[in-house]
Amino acid sequence: MSDKKILFVINPVSGTGKQKKLEKIISSKIDKNKFETDIKYTEYAGHAIKISEDAAGKYDAVIIAGGDGSVNEAAQSLINTGTALGIIPAGSGNGFARHLKLPLKPEKAIETINNCNIKTIDTAELNRKPFVNIAGVGFDADMGYAFANIKKRGFSGYAKVILSSLNKIKGKHYKIIVNEKEISGRFFIIAFANGSQYGLNAKISPFSDISDGKAEIVAVKHFPFILTPFLALRLFTGSIHKSKYTRIFRANKLTIVNDKKIFAHIDGEPLELSENINIKLIPDSLKVIAP
Image (cartoon, rainbow, N blue to C red; front, top):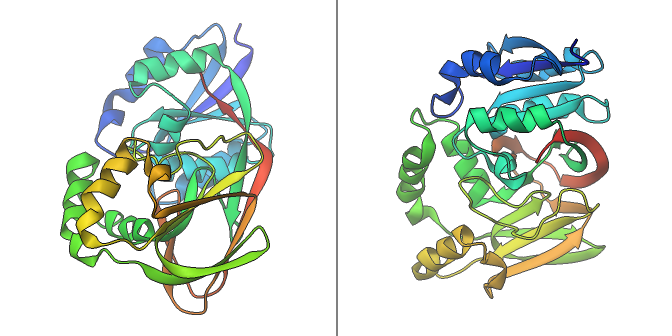
């Protein structure tokens, strides 16, 4: 007899189409001696929030099959509930899943679920909006807005948007407060990193640990346009911290002083804000299934 009850939540339109055969894979690979399973499909943006909220406390785990946006939706409803979050990566970037070192193939991801190794991790919130991986402002937030409006996902779709935006690469003036110090300057990206990467192994904070009670504040200063390929190479080789244009602060909160409309993002999902941006870490607040 199964001793744990888990709910699979599938986003049918997420990422690159891996999820079309998921129901059959789940049925054939899940350990039925360990788990009683239910499956639900999201029907609209934000639906995973409601499904996971209803499941919290009734299920031992909610397994989200989707990309970083879907993972964020499920996670925010499971924070401090005792119900664990599991992930079957089915998005384009899968940044949080990659940070957790989860297998990207659904069959292997279900093996991880069968093993049911549960860890407790930190989460964070931006102006009271929860997230699990990375939030911030700058070029990544602008790209988050652009990505949200493209039809073709995956590396080729993202590359097309980034290449078409290269002529817009420039730092913006920000004032931030971190570790009780005010810092002003022209920055390309300011990221509050609980996890290490945006996705596709683009590591903005290679040494971030999601269970150490601290975040890395990564501030990439404005740089000459000609150096763009070199900074991109550092991003994808896990060496952005070695650039002279990068400053990293360890902290558990960050304020970005702001009084105009700007784009921010949480786990890649764009937000438009016109007030101060306050980000803080919430230690030991979410259970996750990980290797």
